[in-house]
Image 1 (cartoon, rainbow, N blue to C red):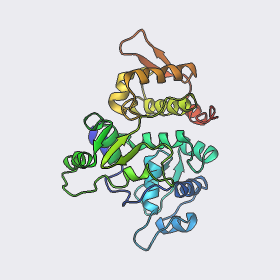
Image 2: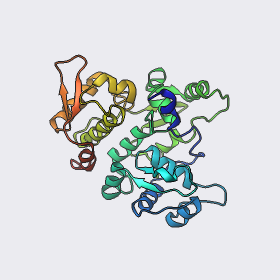
Image 3: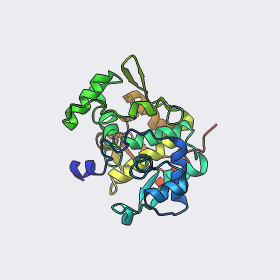
Image 4: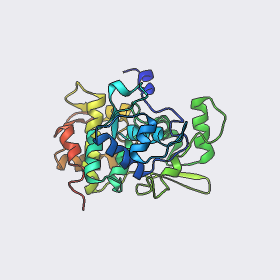
Length: 284
């Protein structure tokens, strides 16, 4: 798949219209999708209670956030239509059943990972956490991130960051994972924690990356998965942390790792569908 095609599927820079992804509205959109409903933005607003004025409101932003987070997809017929038919993904289905208000840490981390996807996430998130991760580092000045995005978009205006930092500082949004925080103009990135109870969620995400990016491969070099999909870069894992994650996932039977090859080869130990169903199994 060409880089142009990959980029064309990402949510554009200003899709959010400065709205944060409030979790109770995400829940309402998941319920709408689960009920198999179809509607334009006004009809979705009436059915879900998500605010929507005559010409603008939160419905388009919440719909796009849910798409970027990998919770829903749009039926083929509704992608270009004013009538939208959202459908739950395997991730969205298990979230609605087990963590409908997205309170769990693993739910928020996985939604964040998906937002950073180079093929289906959000453009600003991808440029911050994947393509620009090395140049930005784990801490950077707000002006540095703004400048990074300004070069990409060829725009000199401020606030290209939008609500990305604020959503991870807001209790109503994604503060549980707190991926980003800001203090005195310094923006800090948090590394995804390596905890046993989060392992199945990480495993499902990695299996989905293999399925999406390498659909015809039985085994994939672990370095290739990071190069094209960011399995290590997006969570911020060091090489030693990544090895710990692979060990954890192998013990749980989610993946198999061939360490006789260099780079190591990985293949699925369970189906992607089963992996998504099990992401909350080890929750305490």
